[in-house]
Image (tube, rainbow, N blue to C red; front, side):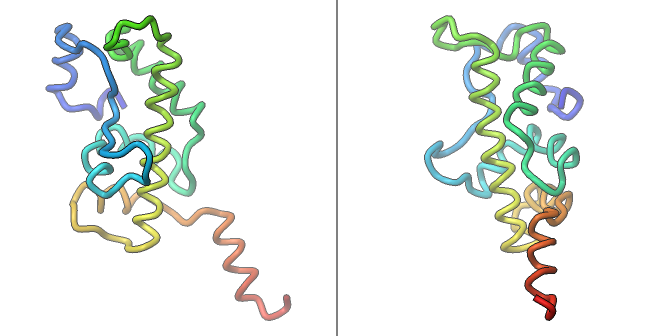
Length: 146
């Protein structure tokens, strides 16, 4: 994740210009993320999808990744913008749930069409593989012996 972030993001965080807040952007946190949301968060999704190409990662795993990323940024990434005293683990968990939703959205977009109109979304879709449970279900349905 660290290497995949753009240089401007590294500079923003390392130069203490980052004042905190959400690191994952969603247009609407209540509905399924759109292809636009996926494209905006491309740099956060790109390292996660190859790690788990056939299913959505666990929220706990993503939380741990974000906490590790915060350590690489010397504790400057997961900052409570409202200065309400939120713990880093809580901020990481909130952001992890957004990333989990985005990973689910990429999978849903992939199932509807293997490519997309946005090159970044298409690249993420190209990293996906069918889930083992869906593959098993498809095999059971096509088998004439059942």
